Amino acid sequence: MFLGIDVGYSVIKAALYDEEGKEVALSRERVVLLNPKPGFYEASMSELWIKTRRVIRNLTKRVDPYAIKAIGFSGGGAGLYSLDERLKPVGNIVTPMDMRAKDILDEWTRTGVHDKIFKRIGQNLMTGSALPALKWFKENERERYNRIKHLLSRKDFVRFKLTNELATEISDTCYGFTNVETQSYDKEVFEILGLEEMFNALPELKENSYDVTGYVTEEAERETGLKEGTPVAAGAHDACCNTMGVGAIKNNMVCAGGGTWSINLLVVDEPMLNKNWCCEHFVEKGKWMLEGASPTSTINLEWFIKNFGEAQMEEAKKKGKSVYEICEKEIEGVDTDVIFLPFLSGFPWRYPYQLNASAGFLGVREEDGKMEMLRALYEGVAFMHAVHIEEFDKRVGVSEVRFTGGAAKSEVWGQMLADVLKKKVAIVDKEETGCFGAALLAALAVGEIKNLEETESLVHVVKEHHPKRDYSKKYETFKEICNSFGKTWNNLEALRY
Image (cartoon, rainbow, N blue to C red; front, side, top):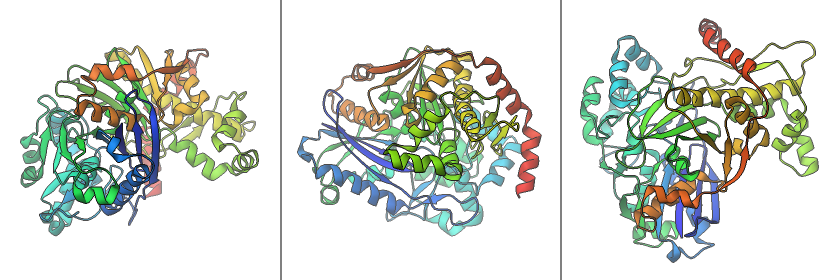
C-alpha cells in the first residue's frame, strides 16, 4: 500500500491506496485559520503537525503500517514557513490570503520591481507569498526576521517532522524561490528585493517531486504509528497532485478543481509566461504547469447557505440529506437573467481581475427571489472556472476538462461547466485526488510505478458531461461587466475602508 497525505489549508487528509489505485482507508482533520488583526491570516505550525500526526495515527490504528511501502505528500502552496537555528518554528505561518504586505507589493508594482520578478519566476506574487512576507518582517519585525534560518513550504515542514530532513522540491519553490526557465534557485530574485541574506535559508532542492527525501524516524514512529525506515517522497504542491490524481498530465487536458478556490491546471512541455496565469514547475524537471486560480468557487455557496440557507439546512436535516442536494434540487427548473460576481475574496494573484474586486448580484428585478439568486451564484462560479480555462484554450488549446473537488460532486456544476466551455467535462473514480496524487508520487519513489505516464492507467473516467445549453450571451455579459468594473471596485473599497 501507499500513503498519500494532503496537507491543505482548511483540511488535512490522509488516504491509503493499494497497488491497483483503490482507496483502502481515509482520515481527515480540519485546521484552524487565525485572524489576530484585520488583514492578518495565520496558522499554527504546531497545530499543523499535531493534526497531521492525528490523521496518520487514525489510519495506522486500522491497517498494518508494515504494509505501507512509501509515503507521499500534497500540500497547499505559497505562504511563509520558517524555522530558527534550533529547527523550531519562528512564529505562526503566514498564509497565502494574508494582506499585511499589500503596501509592499503595491510599491513593487509601481516601481517596476514586480515586473522584473515576474519575468524571472513566471507568476505574480500574492501578498501572502513568502517574499513579500519576508520583506514585511524585515521592515516591521526585524527581531523575528533575524531568527529565520530555514525556509520551507507547508508539506515540507510536515515531512521534516516525519524524517528530520530539511528539503524541498521544484513544484513548491516556484512561488518565488526558483527561476521559471532553469527550475533552480534564483539568487538574483532575493538580491532585487533586498532579501539576499535569506537565500542561505533555502533547503536542499530536489529536482523531482517523487525523489526520496528521507525515511520515517524512530520518534515519528512513536508519534504516528508508521514503521521506522519507511521511504518518504518529496511530495508536491496540491495543484500538481490533483492534476496527477485525475490523470490530466498530457494531451492538453485541464484539471479543474472546484473547492474554496477555482483552480485550473494544464501541464506543458515548456515555460509559457502570461499575466493571466502562473507558470509553475510540474513534478519532474523539464515539465511545467499553467495555473489559473482564484478564490471564486464553493466559498460562494458556503457563504450563501450560512447567511440565507436556513430553510435549506432545516429541510436537509429533516430528510437526512446534505444541504447541497437540497439546493441543487431547488434550482433545477430555475431560469434567471441575474448575474452573480463570485468575488467574495477578491483576486490574491491579481489576475484576471484586480485584487480588490468584490462580489455582487446584478440585474435583479422585483420578480427575482432567493432561488434566482442561488441559480445565478452557481452560474457565476462556473463562469469563473471558464474564464481561467478559456485563457489556456486561446493560447494552447484544451481537449477536455477533468473536474475534481467538492464542486465536482455537483451534477449542476459539472453540466454548467460543459455548457459554458462547450467541451466535454469528465469525472474520475478518485474522490480525494490530492491524496491519490501524493500516493502516486510515493509509488514512483520506490519504483512501483516506472514513470509519470504510467500513472494514467490507474485513473478511470466514470462520468462525462457534454454541452447541452448555450450560455454564450450571459457568459459574454459576465466578462464585459468584470472588465468594466475596475473603478467601481475601487470606489466600493474606499467606502469599506
